[in-house]
Image (cartoon, rainbow over all chains, first blue to last red; front, side, top):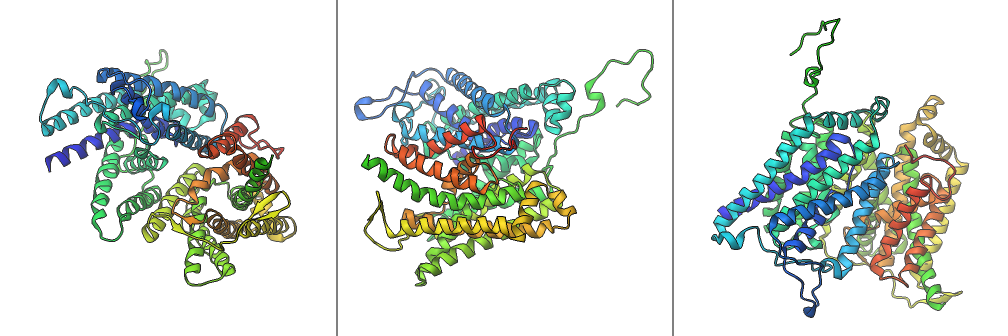
Length: 330
Length: 292
């Protein structure tokens, strides 16, 4: 029981990292990015080949690298690779495409990468994927499984806390306001001298890096990763989490993710015991998610915990010299 | 050379199925301006309706009709129950797009819930392929190609020569102007979704017959290929949609001769991305609509 609770919470915390990634693109800059889970998967693959054992070509198992490096190197490598891929994809797709065409391009990119990873065996062992990845510090700590599970949960929480701290820093920085300005009105932002393309591309790369970090955590948690572990459909779960919680809202995203990725997920998973229909759990989960998205957009488009609005005093402009402002501060 | 001709022959069949679905998508996209990500599900429900009709001992015509009817009902319902209320509220286009994603989740998993996830066999006849000119076609293949041509001509007539088609074209140019000139835009859009769904449902029937088995993702796995055809041809251009479908269908099947068949779709996606980057208005259109 405790193992189940801890592993469910760990997975929920990992999903929060994914949602924070999407919150930068969709929540703050309004890009309908449907490639989030591709970056998650790339992060998991890169982590697995950097920290995992080498493949065994004699048995027909092939993947690149297999360096058995410590976990932090894997995290770093995952972030660097996904950041570079994000720069490439965003750099091309954001250049001049309208919102809906941008979204279509990101889906198509994901499907293409999916096909290549699943079919091209030398890279990540095709459909079978990578396995036998050691868990962070497992050999060093040498704990019993339950205790190690709790340690892993703590490790994921530390990473999540860092991600949240970075998100708050971005949100309240001038750059965060620039992103939201682009979201609200691209033309106005451009008129005020903002380079809309640069702002969007930076946001896209940040999101890719964060998603890659989440993917690396996922790879460490699962100790194996293959193409069954990710599909385009997973991206919709992240969107649902953001809509329910509140697009752009850091606290809302946390709530939404636990609602969708833990509550809805686990409740429908238990439904699998309905005799005679092995698909009922999956089918109901996604139907609920779809209906939830529609319901939230209709009744509460700002989400359960809306994004806090910017206040004039948050900018802390220096007092204008000759004509003191009549507007009261605070 | 023989292989190439065979590839082109398969390409014509694939292209016919894609063309049907693409014309439907393009029609709806140009009139309502929403990229419908639940379009694949229209094909899926059509295919399953045909299966149900077959199990009830309906003949081929009944099956085709059931597919079109079901596709039409579901498409009409999507618009009437979800899209239209949001449009009335003035929802942004991107929100409408997200709604179609949500609808796709609901419909696809509804099919999964009812019919299960396993592949279900769906065969029209077991006729051996015959030589037609340079190509090898089964009876199904021939029916699909002929039906596609007939429906294309019907859509062309509908758009060019009827009042409804004129209203559709007016709305796709500017909904506001159309409304000012007394066109009941909402009504025309409703009917467009209905027609879109009927054609897409029928396309699902042809897809099922051509594949030989059904699964709940049969339509959605084809979705991006259809978007590729629509965008390569130029959104809203019916002739472009046909040409795009032909190009994509033949390119996919012929490529399978040279690269592993698993990369067929990647070929379509490559054409899509190349079109968006180099000629976003589509190969067969003069307007520039995609660029911000």
